[in-house]
Length: 265
Ligand SMILES: N[C@@H](CCC(=O)N[C@@H](CS)C(=O)NCC(=O)O)C(=O)O
Image 1 (cartoon, helix red, strand yellow):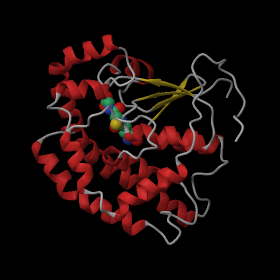
Image 2 (cartoon, protein in one colour):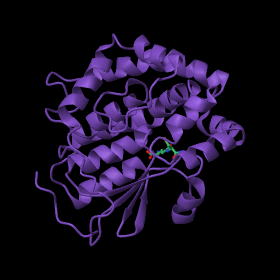
Image 3 (cartoon, helix red, strand yellow):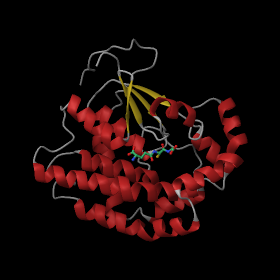
Image 4 (cartoon, helix red, strand yellow):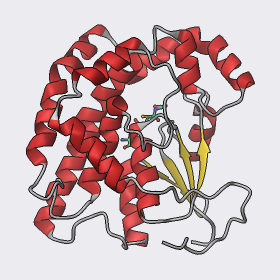
Protein backbone atom coordinates (compact mmCIF):
# COMPACT_ATOMS: atom_id res chain seq x y z
CA UNK A 1 0.00 0.00 0.00
CA UNK A 2 1.42 3.37 -0.93
CA UNK A 3 -1.41 5.57 0.31
CA UNK A 4 -3.53 5.52 3.43
CA UNK A 5 -6.72 3.46 3.19
CA UNK A 6 -9.77 5.70 2.96
CA UNK A 7 -12.96 4.52 4.63
CA UNK A 8 -16.27 5.74 3.22
CA UNK A 9 -18.73 5.23 6.05
CA UNK A 10 -21.92 6.17 7.81
CA UNK A 11 -21.21 7.31 11.36
CA UNK A 12 -24.37 5.75 12.74
CA UNK A 13 -24.05 2.29 11.15
CA UNK A 14 -23.16 -0.95 12.92
CA UNK A 15 -21.70 -2.59 9.77
CA UNK A 16 -19.48 0.46 9.36
CA UNK A 17 -18.48 0.28 13.01
CA UNK A 18 -17.09 -3.23 12.37
CA UNK A 19 -14.58 -1.82 9.89
CA UNK A 20 -13.66 1.25 11.98
CA UNK A 21 -13.00 -1.07 14.92
CA UNK A 22 -10.89 -3.48 12.85
CA UNK A 23 -8.75 -0.61 11.49
CA UNK A 24 -8.36 0.82 15.00
CA UNK A 25 -7.60 -2.62 16.50
CA UNK A 26 -4.82 -3.12 13.97
CA UNK A 27 -3.55 0.42 14.62
CA UNK A 28 -3.79 1.01 10.88
CA UNK A 29 -3.68 4.73 10.09
CA UNK A 30 -6.54 5.58 7.75
CA UNK A 31 -8.69 8.41 6.48
CA UNK A 32 -12.43 8.53 7.02
CA UNK A 33 -15.04 10.16 4.84
CA UNK A 34 -18.40 10.28 6.50
CA UNK A 35 -21.34 10.22 4.06
CA UNK A 36 -24.95 11.17 4.68
CA UNK A 37 -27.51 8.35 4.22
CA UNK A 38 -29.57 9.00 1.10
CA UNK A 39 -27.15 11.57 -0.31
CA UNK A 40 -24.41 8.94 -0.50
CA UNK A 41 -25.90 7.06 -3.46
CA UNK A 42 -24.41 8.84 -6.53
CA UNK A 43 -20.84 8.79 -5.18
CA UNK A 44 -20.90 5.20 -3.92
CA UNK A 45 -22.61 3.90 -7.06
CA UNK A 46 -20.09 5.69 -9.22
CA UNK A 47 -17.18 4.19 -7.27
CA UNK A 48 -18.48 0.65 -6.74
CA UNK A 49 -21.58 -0.02 -8.88
CA UNK A 50 -23.69 -0.56 -5.75
CA UNK A 51 -24.83 1.74 -2.95
CA UNK A 52 -23.97 0.10 0.37
CA UNK A 53 -21.33 1.23 2.86
CA UNK A 54 -18.78 0.48 4.26
CA UNK A 55 -16.38 0.81 1.34
CA UNK A 56 -12.63 0.88 1.94
CA UNK A 57 -10.50 2.42 -0.79
CA UNK A 58 -7.11 0.70 -0.78
CA UNK A 59 -4.72 2.45 -3.11
CA UNK A 60 -7.87 3.80 -4.74
CA UNK A 61 -9.36 0.33 -5.31
CA UNK A 62 -12.72 -0.20 -3.57
CA UNK A 63 -13.25 -3.12 -1.22
CA UNK A 64 -16.96 -3.45 -0.43
CA UNK A 65 -18.73 -4.94 2.59
CA UNK A 66 -17.64 -5.32 6.20
CA UNK A 67 -16.85 -9.06 6.04
CA UNK A 68 -14.73 -8.74 2.89
CA UNK A 69 -12.91 -5.70 4.25
CA UNK A 70 -12.09 -7.41 7.57
CA UNK A 71 -10.59 -10.40 5.72
CA UNK A 72 -8.54 -8.14 3.45
CA UNK A 73 -7.22 -6.21 6.47
CA UNK A 74 -6.26 -9.49 8.15
CA UNK A 75 -4.50 -10.73 4.99
CA UNK A 76 -2.49 -7.54 4.62
CA UNK A 77 -1.80 -6.91 8.31
CA UNK A 78 -2.14 -10.17 10.27
CA UNK A 79 -0.79 -8.69 13.49
CA UNK A 80 -2.56 -8.17 15.84
CA UNK A 81 -4.79 -10.99 14.64
CA UNK A 82 -8.57 -10.86 14.51
CA UNK A 83 -9.17 -14.30 13.02
CA UNK A 84 -8.28 -17.54 14.86
CA UNK A 85 -5.66 -19.78 13.22
CA UNK A 86 -7.20 -23.01 14.52
CA UNK A 87 -9.61 -24.25 11.79
CA UNK A 88 -12.39 -25.27 14.20
CA UNK A 89 -12.25 -21.92 16.00
CA UNK A 90 -12.10 -20.11 12.66
CA UNK A 91 -15.26 -21.93 11.47
CA UNK A 92 -17.08 -20.95 14.70
CA UNK A 93 -15.93 -17.33 14.42
CA UNK A 94 -17.09 -17.15 10.78
CA UNK A 95 -20.47 -18.65 11.72
CA UNK A 96 -21.00 -16.22 14.60
CA UNK A 97 -20.06 -13.25 12.41
CA UNK A 98 -22.45 -14.47 9.67
CA UNK A 99 -25.31 -14.86 12.17
CA UNK A 100 -24.87 -11.33 13.51
CA UNK A 101 -24.37 -9.80 10.03
CA UNK A 102 -27.15 -11.63 8.23
CA UNK A 103 -29.83 -12.13 10.91
CA UNK A 104 -29.30 -9.73 13.77
CA UNK A 105 -27.98 -6.60 12.01
CA UNK A 106 -30.94 -6.07 9.63
CA UNK A 107 -33.46 -6.67 12.44
CA UNK A 108 -31.79 -4.25 14.86
CA UNK A 109 -31.34 -1.64 12.14
CA UNK A 110 -35.07 -1.92 11.40
CA UNK A 111 -35.92 -1.38 15.08
CA UNK A 112 -33.45 1.51 15.39
CA UNK A 113 -34.70 3.41 12.31
CA UNK A 114 -38.36 2.77 13.21
CA UNK A 115 -37.83 5.00 16.26
CA UNK A 116 -36.65 7.87 14.01
CA UNK A 117 -38.64 7.70 10.78
CA UNK A 118 -41.79 9.24 12.22
CA UNK A 119 -39.73 12.10 13.74
CA UNK A 120 -38.38 14.13 10.80
CA UNK A 121 -36.37 16.65 12.85
CA UNK A 122 -34.71 13.98 15.03
CA UNK A 123 -34.10 11.82 11.98
CA UNK A 124 -32.41 14.71 10.16
CA UNK A 125 -30.20 15.49 13.19
CA UNK A 126 -29.15 11.85 13.52
CA UNK A 127 -28.60 11.21 9.79
CA UNK A 128 -26.61 14.38 9.13
CA UNK A 129 -24.63 14.38 12.38
CA UNK A 130 -21.24 15.97 11.64
CA UNK A 131 -22.41 17.57 8.36
CA UNK A 132 -23.08 21.28 7.74
CA UNK A 133 -26.34 22.95 8.67
CA UNK A 134 -27.00 23.52 4.94
CA UNK A 135 -26.75 19.75 4.36
CA UNK A 136 -29.09 19.16 7.30
CA UNK A 137 -31.62 21.63 5.91
CA UNK A 138 -31.50 20.04 2.47
CA UNK A 139 -31.82 16.53 3.96
CA UNK A 140 -34.83 17.67 6.01
CA UNK A 141 -36.42 19.11 2.86
CA UNK A 142 -35.85 15.84 0.96
CA UNK A 143 -37.10 13.69 3.85
CA UNK A 144 -40.70 13.23 2.58
CA UNK A 145 -39.28 11.82 -0.66
CA UNK A 146 -36.58 9.70 0.99
CA UNK A 147 -38.67 8.25 3.83
CA UNK A 148 -40.53 5.63 1.73
CA UNK A 149 -37.23 4.60 0.11
CA UNK A 150 -35.60 4.21 3.55
CA UNK A 151 -38.58 2.15 4.73
CA UNK A 152 -38.45 -0.22 1.79
CA UNK A 153 -34.63 -0.41 1.68
CA UNK A 154 -34.43 -1.45 5.35
CA UNK A 155 -37.74 -3.31 5.58
CA UNK A 156 -39.23 -0.93 8.14
CA UNK A 157 -42.84 -2.13 7.96
CA UNK A 158 -45.28 -3.46 10.55
CA UNK A 159 -44.83 -7.14 9.67
CA UNK A 160 -41.01 -7.08 9.70
CA UNK A 161 -40.88 -4.92 12.82
CA UNK A 162 -43.10 -7.41 14.61
CA UNK A 163 -40.74 -10.26 13.66
CA UNK A 164 -37.73 -8.22 14.81
CA UNK A 165 -39.37 -7.46 18.17
CA UNK A 166 -40.31 -11.11 18.65
CA UNK A 167 -36.79 -12.32 17.87
CA UNK A 168 -34.90 -9.69 19.89
CA UNK A 169 -34.72 -11.89 22.98
CA UNK A 170 -33.44 -14.84 20.94
CA UNK A 171 -30.53 -12.74 19.64
CA UNK A 172 -29.47 -12.14 23.22
CA UNK A 173 -30.00 -15.86 23.99
CA UNK A 174 -27.60 -16.79 21.19
CA UNK A 175 -25.02 -14.19 22.22
CA UNK A 176 -25.12 -15.28 25.85
CA UNK A 177 -24.85 -18.95 24.85
CA UNK A 178 -21.64 -18.21 22.91
CA UNK A 179 -19.81 -16.42 25.74
CA UNK A 180 -16.98 -18.66 26.91
CA UNK A 181 -15.39 -18.98 30.37
CA UNK A 182 -12.82 -16.25 29.59
CA UNK A 183 -15.51 -13.83 28.42
CA UNK A 184 -14.85 -14.20 24.67
CA UNK A 185 -17.07 -15.84 22.06
CA UNK A 186 -14.31 -17.95 20.48
CA UNK A 187 -11.16 -19.06 22.32
CA UNK A 188 -9.35 -17.06 24.98
CA UNK A 189 -8.76 -13.80 23.16
CA UNK A 190 -10.66 -10.93 21.62
CA UNK A 191 -11.35 -11.62 17.94
CA UNK A 192 -13.63 -11.17 14.97
CA UNK A 193 -16.63 -12.91 16.60
CA UNK A 194 -16.51 -10.52 19.58
CA UNK A 195 -15.99 -7.51 17.33
CA UNK A 196 -18.82 -8.43 14.95
CA UNK A 197 -21.36 -9.34 17.64
CA UNK A 198 -20.64 -6.29 19.79
CA UNK A 199 -20.55 -3.86 16.84
CA UNK A 200 -23.87 -5.17 15.48
CA UNK A 201 -25.50 -4.90 18.91
CA UNK A 202 -24.53 -1.20 19.11
CA UNK A 203 -27.58 -0.46 16.95
CA UNK A 204 -29.64 -0.50 20.13
CA UNK A 205 -27.02 -0.53 22.93
CA UNK A 206 -24.78 2.44 21.94
CA UNK A 207 -21.91 1.94 24.45
CA UNK A 208 -20.12 5.12 25.58
CA UNK A 209 -17.01 4.13 23.57
CA UNK A 210 -18.95 4.04 20.26
CA UNK A 211 -17.03 6.72 18.34
CA UNK A 212 -20.05 8.76 17.17
CA UNK A 213 -22.56 9.29 19.99
CA UNK A 214 -26.14 9.83 18.84
CA UNK A 215 -27.34 13.43 19.09
CA UNK A 216 -29.37 14.05 22.25
CA UNK A 217 -32.17 13.69 23.07
CA UNK A 218 -32.83 10.20 21.71
CA UNK A 219 -36.34 9.33 20.55
CA UNK A 220 -38.22 8.00 23.62
CA UNK A 221 -38.94 4.75 21.72
CA UNK A 222 -35.19 4.16 21.31
CA UNK A 223 -34.60 4.79 25.02
CA UNK A 224 -37.40 2.29 25.77
CA UNK A 225 -35.95 -0.26 23.37
CA UNK A 226 -32.51 -0.01 24.99
CA UNK A 227 -33.99 -0.18 28.49
CA UNK A 228 -36.01 -3.27 27.56
CA UNK A 229 -32.79 -5.29 27.11
CA UNK A 230 -30.60 -3.57 29.71
CA UNK A 231 -30.93 -6.40 32.22
CA UNK A 232 -29.59 -9.00 29.78
CA UNK A 233 -26.15 -10.52 30.38
CA UNK A 234 -25.49 -9.99 26.64
CA UNK A 235 -26.10 -6.26 27.07
CA UNK A 236 -23.52 -6.09 29.88
CA UNK A 237 -21.14 -8.18 27.77
CA UNK A 238 -21.32 -5.65 24.90
CA UNK A 239 -20.60 -2.76 27.30
CA UNK A 240 -17.71 -4.68 28.80
CA UNK A 241 -16.14 -5.67 25.46
CA UNK A 242 -16.39 -2.05 24.30
CA UNK A 243 -14.85 -0.75 27.51
CA UNK A 244 -11.96 -3.22 27.33
CA UNK A 245 -11.30 -3.54 23.59
CA UNK A 246 -12.64 -0.62 21.55
CA UNK A 247 -9.37 1.29 22.07
CA UNK A 248 -8.08 4.44 20.42
CA UNK A 249 -8.90 5.58 16.90
CA UNK A 250 -6.23 5.20 14.20
CA UNK A 251 -7.95 7.76 11.99
CA UNK A 252 -5.59 10.33 10.50
CA UNK A 253 -6.90 13.88 10.03
CA UNK A 254 -7.49 14.51 6.32
CA UNK A 255 -4.97 17.37 6.14
CA UNK A 256 -2.01 15.10 7.01
CA UNK A 257 0.18 13.78 4.12
CA UNK A 258 -1.30 10.59 2.71
CA UNK A 259 1.67 8.18 2.95
CA UNK A 260 2.39 7.40 6.58
CA UNK A 261 4.07 4.51 8.43
CA UNK A 262 2.38 2.70 11.32
CA UNK A 263 1.40 4.70 14.38
CA UNK A 264 3.29 3.98 17.60
CA UNK A 265 1.34 1.38 19.60
N1 LIG B 1 -23.43 -6.95 4.21
C1 LIG B 1 -23.02 -5.58 4.15
C2 LIG B 1 -24.21 -4.72 4.56
C3 LIG B 1 -23.93 -3.23 4.46
C4 LIG B 1 -25.19 -2.39 4.62
O1 LIG B 1 -26.32 -2.91 4.74
N2 LIG B 1 -24.98 -1.08 4.65
C5 LIG B 1 -26.08 -0.16 4.79
C6 LIG B 1 -25.84 0.73 6.00
S1 LIG B 1 -26.08 -0.12 7.52
C7 LIG B 1 -26.12 0.76 3.59
O2 LIG B 1 -25.10 1.17 3.11
N3 LIG B 1 -27.32 1.15 3.14
C8 LIG B 1 -27.48 2.13 2.11
C9 LIG B 1 -27.94 1.57 0.80
O3 LIG B 1 -28.34 0.39 0.74
O4 LIG B 1 -27.89 2.31 -0.18
C10 LIG B 1 -21.80 -5.37 5.05
O5 LIG B 1 -21.52 -6.23 5.90
O6 LIG B 1 -21.09 -4.37 4.90
